[in-house]
Length: 277
Image (cartoon, rainbow, N blue to C red; front, side, top):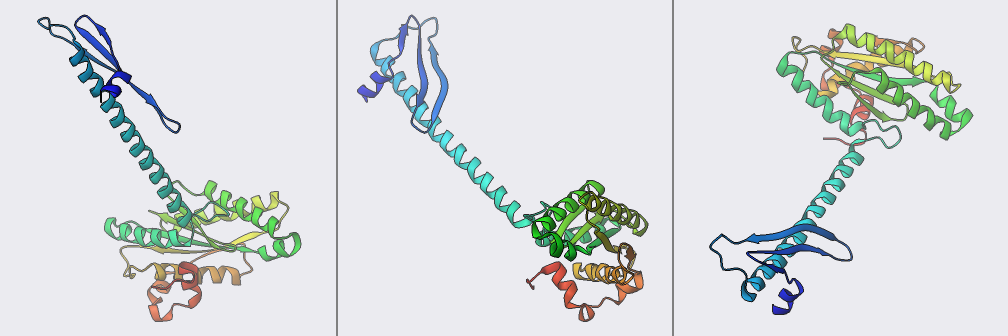
């Protein structure tokens, strides 16, 4: 202990002593400041014993600061890795949009919020027209570049409160809270035009078909994400049937008709992928 205290020897001055609380290692550098002790006017000054005690205190303070810095660093690294893992599991790696898993959770969350606060909720399913021809004619790299551009076009077009996801392949979705059928139709029109314009800039004749389903809390819809996506999927099929490059809205009657036993496997694949509950 005496050798340690000598290593941290202070500067003896009348009625005051100061010790540096600072140290460094090969992997960590800490500069903590100065341990400063001042005697009262009635003090007798510093002798060797008192100086040695305070030298040890300064050393212990340094060790405690180093340990605290290590734990703070570990906590920051753990938080970074956690955020990174969450991003990887909820983000589409190609476009940077949310993925199917994140969309599933968001639809369920927004449905509950809409029912609680009496607000409408709209879901837009987007399927690209003639996208396969891009891959066949120009290759998959060109197709991937076009998908990224379309993802950016969707993000530019929607509101900050909307939620966009890529379901896979050439299929996208937008969850639009506090949005009734008429406003959802306006959003679909803007998205369709933005996609066509961005595709044209890349010299591709790709358009979009969009199906819209809107949940109104006043109606007797079951609070089920698959019901909402089934209605939007059926409207999307209708848009594709009319030669694409358009949008269709699901009717309330269609939504009420969407019983679990009647939901096609295609709608489950859109929402859940290969997962089942």
